[in-house]
Length: 126
Image 1 (cartoon, rainbow, N blue to C red):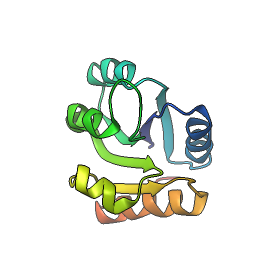
Image 2: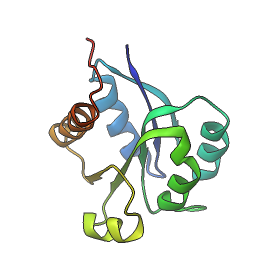
Image 3: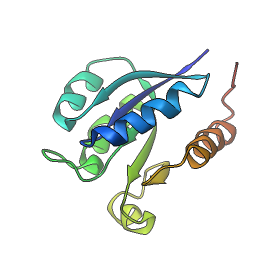
C-alpha cells in the first residue's frame, strides 16, 4: 500500500527536493508535480483523491492558500511548504494540517508524515 502525493510549487528546486524525499519514503508515491497552480487545480480537481498535497504559498496566478480551498475535498492532508513563518500561515489559513518551513530537511519531512499517519491511525506497510 502506498499514499499518493502531489507537489505544487513555482520553484523547481523545491519540487525536486520534495520529490527526492517522497521517493526515499517507501510508502509514498508521487502522483504529479506542478509549477503552475492553475494547472494543478485543473488536473487534481478532475482526478482521484490525493493523500498528501504539498503546497507553496507564494505563487503567481494563485496563492497556495486559495488553491487549498479549491482542492481541500481532493486531498486528505494539505501540507504547506513555505518560507513564511508558521504563525503567518495560520493567520491566512487556520485549517491546514501541517507546515514545513523552507528549507525543508528530510528529518522534518519524515517526522511530519509519520506524525500525520500516527494521529490518523493510518497503516504503514513497507
